[in-house]
Image (cartoon, rainbow, N blue to C red; front, side, top):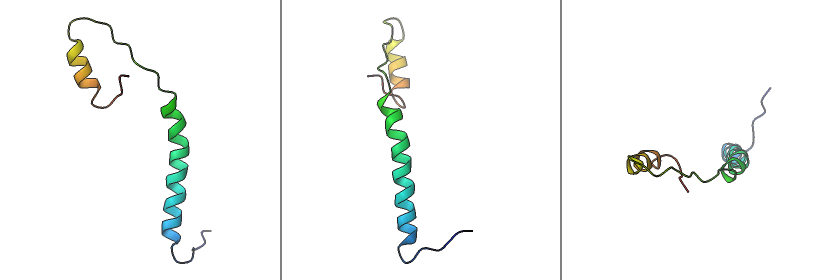
Length: 57
């Protein structure tokens, strides 16, 4: 079912997987819209907690 690749096959396979992942992920990241948080109590806490993992701009 699977064929073996000559020397460097593992590196080539890893490169193909990385390129495929980038081709899928980059368009998804480009479509991210800026987040406009409402001014109010606790805004600094929300920005501090959420901006650790998410972009707010």
